[in-house]
Length: 364
Image (tube, rainbow, N blue to C red; front, side, top):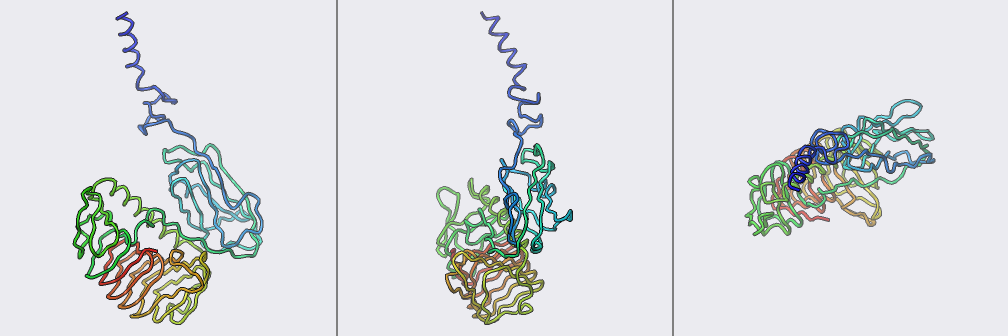
């Protein structure tokens, strides 16, 4: 009986590395250590629907996969063509979803073919079993703009990569976060550490303050939020514009309906402008350089327009001078300043540093 038990134990030791390994590898399904059996990804849905007609000319092409994908391979494996000619654009891939935004409006009354090839691989490095293609035909209509997904970045009213500087006294309603810089880059706030060590609080902030040097899961939460912020910036920048170079980069007294507005230079808002529309309308402002609001200049909402549906994609510096008021989600790539008495009804999501001088920021 003892000899049989020894034989069973020896056999298990000899085979244990291959138990559950369908490819004869080391137990992880690929011989490379990913910790589990890998599955072959597939396309669950794609849009516009196959053989759809009268598709809006400002539409995107989107795909939902059966599992999270490697964004680089999805972008490389996707094509959108018309008459065999590739349509330029930007692929935004996150998790199991991917959206391709054409760089200009699609041609009217034109048939398009969208294809994602077997070069697209899952996060576990497994390729699609077969290419997936679908066709659709545009009409002449322009559809409503779609909101920019903020995902985890939307949990914050203020998020920055390289620091937050406060000059008291500011009023901030919502959570703050910095990453990859640590909490030492948050200055001007007297921070009080929570007993859990996962976040801090301060009298000028109605919400929590997160940093990657705080206890888990703060670092994981912030890393995901920063990635989502950068993806949102790219997404907003990728939308085909409805209006370009309005006012040659200077606005004041304008009333703007929903849509995508683009400037290849700086944008200066000298006096009040009004955004008028419904609660489902979306505004996207693409600014290739800086955005400056003059002292006292205000963004005014009318007709039910909501700050949650307004997106300012700013590649240069954002400056809101004293008493200026901004509405919407700011996706900033460079330094950001809200000067004394300036206010924002929205979110400030910055890829560098943020300075607030006695400013007010309220999460919508």
